[in-house]
Length: 171
Image 1: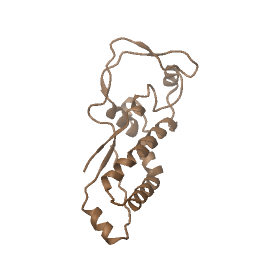
Image 2: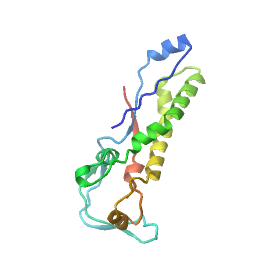
Image 3: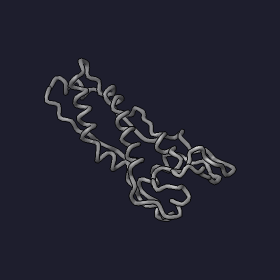
Image 4: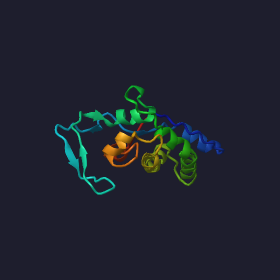
């Protein structure tokens, strides 16, 4: 969905040699096994609208969370869903902070391990993505969607997309 490349300057030649031999990678997002459940009958959610009234949901087909996230990130013009680039916004707004974390973690480690550092970074990245999902309000929902949901948070309905951001190691 979105790749973030972070370059860090390492002045210590010995440390650079050690780290350059390590293969490390991190993927944050949604993966193959994460789905919204298929619902046969309409139901009322235990998550109330801001006015305290129960929220009614229609029957729905099973769908992958990654597909919903991608539709929100890039938009789906034929369904009148505008792009809401929350992943791009998260990366642009936080890459300096992530870079500083990596640099500090490596500098403060007796035995620097790049994969271990990236694994520690995951909590920060996931929290930053979830914060962006909660805070992004533009472009706003259509009036009909606001009436149906009871509020105008374009990236939150049931909270599944926000609550299922996860990570895995990659190369």
